[in-house]
Length: 378
Image (cartoon, rainbow, N blue to C red; front, side, top):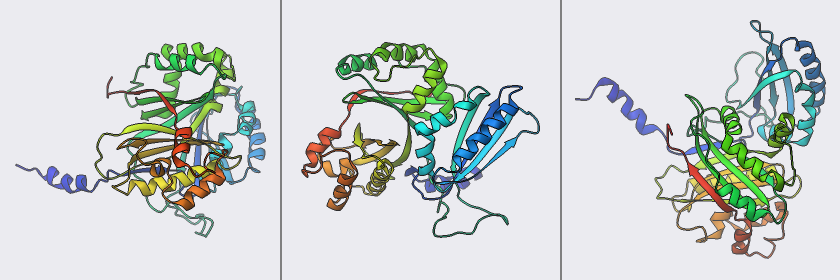
């Protein structure tokens, strides 16, 4: 017998799309919310540091406004909100060395922070600015899969790559369960020359997962083992040095998409696209546009794509069916010659100038060191 709740929920279930699309490239304004927990007694010091930071941020391209609020219940809790013209200029700034140096005065008075970023979808009220050619809201809500993707990258000393690869391939994975709401779903490690990229998928709270990973003895042992081989050799036992190292190593996911069609088993691969100075965001956006198109094409070998980008570092993780080498054009994200030509102008490499896409595919391909999935509750 079919119950009323089953009859009501059935059509809703059929309407849920399997297509996933998450992106920073909507072009809509960005609202950033920063939750700050200040040390007791350091409120005035924090306010002075914020005012100095605020005057510097005002000149950053893409910044619109910001607001500082203090809790009426707990004076140690503060809220900073800011608006940006769009997500890319904010990410360019927050991931820059300029930002690392700019926020240093806050470290001595802040116990903890949490940053949340939102595209503006709708606005109401008398203070809502009018729509214009330069200000458009996100047209429609995007559909996610409940997972957050993030990556870290760093370089090791040339000649140490085989030793580092062996250490990374043999490490014991950390405990997958972070807390009641957060789970590590997947960890993938790749190398391209002397560059290491570690990509993770998290269900729940990314910040909680990153802190959980950093505390795990297995992970600490790995970083202690590879520390002598790092080009930038921080003292990971020093909190401030470790914090700066991992801040510089962070590479956010700027785009993720999967198609709506059921696909057979696929293989995970990673491609490294070194961008020319100042061209990283444009390059990532070009690849994102092509992967959105591929996700709607049932003939495409690309089942899903995640693009990570920071400054001139662009890494594209793809799920490929039918073999990695079957067709270099969609695998590289270059469905037509015009786009291949545009990519050539953005890459810090002469690899595409010969027009040999198969050769460039081999140059861009990253070596998979390990790929581990976690089952729920493990």
